[in-house]
Image (tube, rainbow, N blue to C red; front, top):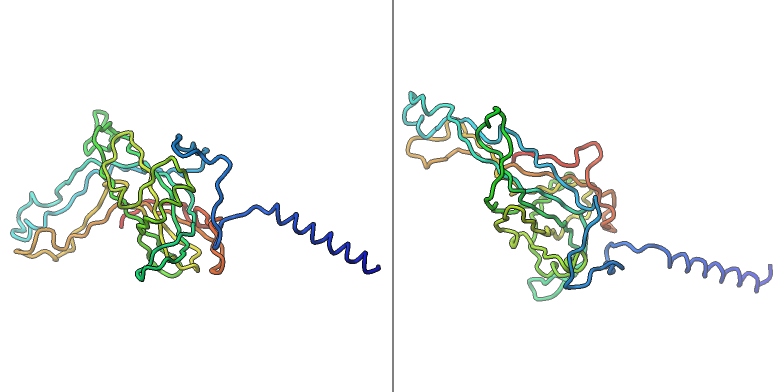
Length: 298
């Protein structure tokens, strides 16, 4: 083969590689920013209609036993152990819940102001979610048929969100961060025509039939994390409590030694990547060999 033929073959190879690279679909990772989709809604229009399955919906899993708990009134028994009416007292309450939906975990690069006044580019992990008040409550007493049934309610629900991201491998805990400067880029990416609230702005009364959209965000997440869970609190008023035996003494403040736990949603995620190139497409809802989500008391 002569030099001119070799040179022509080499050039053709470069052209082929260049064409191939042009057709590689871009994806968001470190150092990259999302591009506007062809179907990006026009600012000032209606919110985007999401395709079925984009939002994951969680079953609230209400149970009859959550409406009642039985305890000794330790404050009375500490004064007189013979007060039988203070033993195994039933405490009843109505249980409300909010319908919770969420989109897959995502990442976005944002310039975040630092304490020294400078801007620093950070990779923010975030999750878009919605809460809706279905206008239903679980009553604390049985109906005429002897069963507990959901009842209609015209009362608003006070939503106080609390999110935590916890690593399985390293035991690290990341409370959600309010990053106002990130809300604009996130809204532009997700839906410019929908109002999204951070965890402080989401503290509000949710009226029956109303839906509110929120964004929970985390920064400085350890890039080595592969398996993690997001805990979401405030979605129901279900709770449990126990008194530590012997902790309350006559003269102590009421409630001393009493421990409270709230019903909390746990979402499991898996990120089968490495620490050198964090990429949002590596996020997987659910962990192999474990449940995708569960309700627990903590």
